[in-house]
Image (cartoon, rainbow, N blue to C red; front, side, top):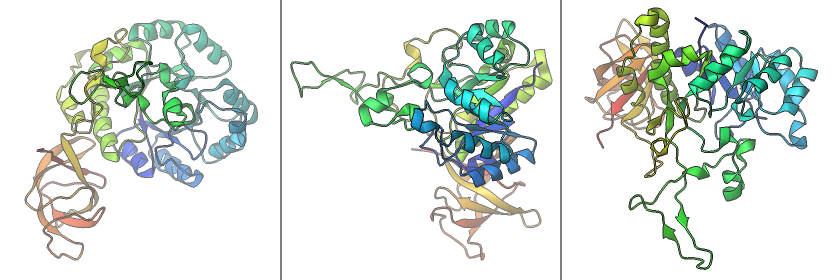
Amino acid sequence: MRKIELLAPAGDFEKLKTAIDYGADAVYLGGDSFGLRKASKNFSLDEIAEGVKYSHERGRKVYVTMNIVPHDKDMVGAADYAKSLVDVGVDAIIVSDLGMMSLLMREVPDIKIHISTQASVTNYETVMFYYNLGIRRIVFARELSLAEIKEIRSKVPDDMDIECFVHGAMCISYSGRCLISNYMTGRDANQGDCAQGCRYKYNLVEEKRPGEYFPIIEDDEGTFILNSKDLCMLPYIPEMVDAGITSFKIEGRVKSSYYIATVLSSYRRAIDDFIRLGDNYKYDPSLMDEIKKASHRDFTTGFYFGKPDESAQNYGTSSYVRGYDFIGIVKDYDRNTGIAIIEQRNRFFPGEEIEIFGPRGYYKETINGLTDLDGNPKDVANIPQELVKIKVDNEVQENYMLRRKNEE
């Protein structure tokens, strides 16, 4: 079996640590230039260096995006920036543009380059074009089926890594090359500033009746004609491995640390179980129940089993399903006293039933002995990111998370 990499998003340093602690083999992130996610906090060069150090100390890798669709002015400083990334130990740079690739290969020959999904690679000839230039990893376009991926895998050299998205938001446009955001808001999705115009509510206007808006009705709240469900391939680990995918990529650099921990831990357990059990592996549906404890849309398998039909769209709402609230994260724990220091992320009260989870699962607890750091009792933890103490019945570790079922 080929080695399978579980690749996680990191929108800031806290999310990077969460991804590494919850089982990612590698993380991908954006610096403060040349990347496609302006909505995430992104990393300064010093923060990238810190993230590389944290990851490498634990045997994990860091990939940095330089995957904008650049104009001439956007190329200024790109080579120097890439050299800085090499200096701090980044494992690879992700690019989508042939010009950017050519520049970096010429000016920064020591760096490994991965080809972004934005390059829309969908066939064997394109894979070999990149391979013959020295590229050894391609993030395939999302429009490929598993059968197509398997066919390409059978034709390309063994040392070509195939990376594919397995979980997260799906762009309605071809592998993310979209003009809706630019047209509607002036924000260029291909420069990292997507406004997600595909998820707006739309009405129909007849050209000779300006100002008269006719709803395209699915329900009383309107319609979302371009609103894809989220990708989820958790039940299909064996099929993806059989297709020859070597890196399983989770989308979500703008998602929360709680989301990353929840999704990542389920994929980690499924992949590890498959590697351990082989032909005896059976999908565990409880892992999907875990994933659904993070904010999510309804799920689809995208193009993996053929072109998606209307069932891959949600025509009623673009809202997320939020079954649980993320209420805190463990910052420290004293084994002798059973006292955990919690950083508050959502208000909680003494006596509430909660779940505490880590990389290998969760258990239920009741919040007992809620105090401030000086031991003074508290009726509620409601100050954003305040540090409080609670008594726990089970041993916890730093970066374990607390959640509470949302009864609304």
